[in-house]
Amino acid sequence: MLADLHLHTTESDGTWSPHELTQEAAKRGLKTIAITDHDTTAGIGEALAHAPEGLQVIPGIELSAVSESGEEVHVIGLWIDPTARSLQRQLSILRESRLSRTEEILNRLQKLGVALSYEDVLRYAQKDVLSRSHIASALLEKGYVQTKQEAFTTYIGQGAPAYVERYKISPEDAVELILGAGGVPVLAHPGLLGNLDILPTMVDAGLVGLEVIHSSHIPEQVEFFHDLANKWGLLPSGGSDCHGPGGKDQVYLGNYNIPNSWVEKLSQARSL
Image (tube, rainbow, N blue to C red; front, side):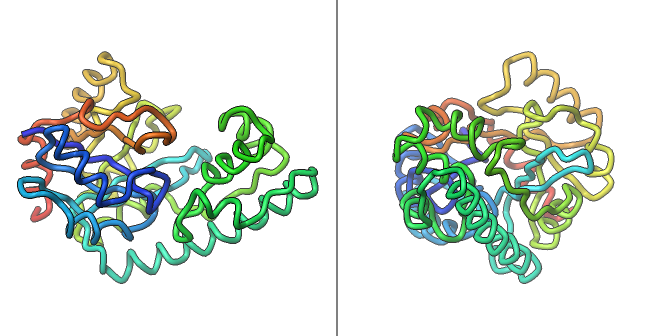
């Protein structure tokens, strides 16, 4: 009864539609998946409607936050109510900030002699969730860079000439938004963080889970984060963070799974 509780679709920066993702998950023998697109719930309805028999789809989200030290922190929400007003109000603000940020990045690229249009970027993105990854894809297609990583290093990464700061919420705010939507908040891929100084305040805010299994975690990290979860009274979670074929990484679906017992404990935490 394997599960993957960290997956993306075309509604954020994935390459499989929600429908396609459910079909692929079933083919790979998964029994439970969570749709956790970045800062949007737009793919949940389609995934639920098209899930094959025997596949449980958990409505989720991955909220982007920034710590006081300026580090980006991602918080997954599982079993959220996609219609929760407090959550949707915040997502609306995030969508507007992404649009204005994209426009400013394109203006800065124009001044650098890089002719990239809004329509070029939309070829790779849904309007709800425009990201620098989509801009990087457009730069690659237009031949301005040889890789997406080069796009970040040369143009749009932090410290690069076309980089623009984005609207920020704190990790604690992200936890509270997920709780307010009836969900279970989980700190995503802690192995990608520079440090875990944020953990105490996130736990105080109501953090429930820690992503122990992730495609970026080596076996030693999996063991370390499992012990850390126990130390802080957090529930272990995990998933592949798969973005689909041609996405940001390899197709990890079916390779980084968690047991059903973890899913059950996380589900039970909704009523605590």
